[in-house]
Amino acid sequence: MADTTLFTPLRLGSLSLPNRVIMAPLTRARTPDSVPGKLQQAYYGQRAGAGLIISEATNISPTARGYVYTPGIWTDAQEAGWQQVVEAVHAKGGRIALQLWHVGRVSHEMVQPDGQPPVAPSALKGEGAECFVEFEDGSAGRHPTSTPRALETDEIPGIVEDYRQAAVRAKRAGFDMVEVHAANAYLLNQFLATGTNQRTDRYGGSVENRARFPLEVVDAVAEVFGPDRVGIRLTPFIEIFGLSDDEPEAMAFYLAEQLGRRGLAYLHFNEPNWAGGDVTFPEGFREQMRERFGGSLIYCGHYDAERAQQRLEENTADAIAFGRPFIANPDLPERLRLGASLNEPDQGTFYGGGEQGYTDYPFLDNGYDHRA
Ligand SMILES: Cc1cc2nc3c(=O)[nH]c(=O)nc-3n(C[C@H](O)[C@H](O)[C@H](O)COP(=O)(O)O)c2cc1C
View 1: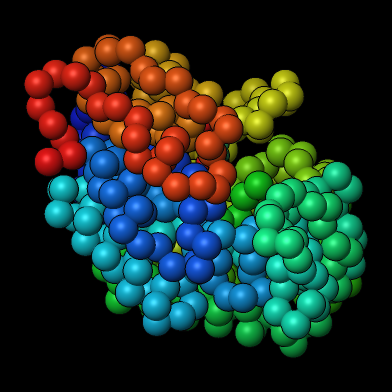
View 2: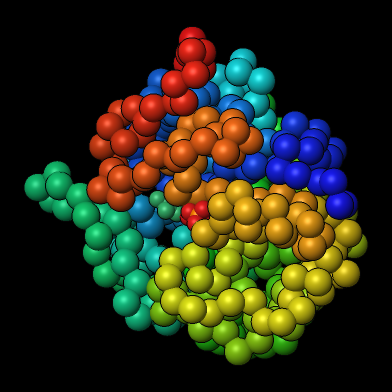
């Protein structure tokens, strides 16, 4: 491992990556009709130099939504839109995974089909949680989430099936991999955490029971793609959108072992302090993940080239994902390789809008037009 750098190739499951600079999943809310189009083809195509692009979180069904203008993967039009994005990335020599998303309780009746309440493991409102809605006057903005209703036990297989169908469409669209979004206080994370899951059926209570639904989702998706083409994103220790958890470490250990046994391609951890705060992984956590999980480990959150390199050298990570730096630097891997300066991301254009702050960040001016 001593000679490994961000620019050493990596075998991620059954996919070969030319480098270890991963583009993190980034919601950009630029698909008003939930169908990716030319703008997304340009944006993702520009970033094809990443070892792997992980797409923005993509809704698996109409009830999975909590944010307007985010894309879906449950209709033919959405699938066809994504297929063209995948083609644009492949044409530039890149690889792309689709991140499969269900927000659970981080939603509002205004975004849900027929004005129904959002669904969650338990009928507990996320304190301080906000989603993104369209108001009657056509404007859009943040809005406190609704109180969800608890899913009935016999409804859960239907949601597992939604994930499976989403994976079927992702495969047909040509994605190289899928990433199950079990992070950031959304539905699967709500099942994993003690504060949001107070169920008394086989999906609540013990670590094994709370992990059951997320593992059923992984199994369903892995049947479609093969486990060596599936990754999962986790955020143990994160406390956002009112989510709290008394047993994050025990759950992470259990999941690492279970997912390792299944031969999953990778675990992708978002650092607990990625959105602020000073919580970090406990001492020895990263080493435990290495010991308990046989696949690749990806970490994300406030990394620069130096800190990324440190993780590779200490052998706790196989690749590093970059979020905000990839928003502002379409040619991030090349910039990191050359030690070049980075463009600063403009927070005002993170969500919504068009080309501005999306496809207009400059490439390195080194005489070669990467957009050609
Ligand atoms: C604008 C924006 C959108 C994001 N959207 C997603 C998303 O769709 N799915 C996800 O898992 N994480 C999402 N994240 C978290 C990022 O993937 C990443 O974990 C975080 O930005 C930390 O990495 P960084 O410090 O390199 O930016 C988002 C972050 C930002 C700033």
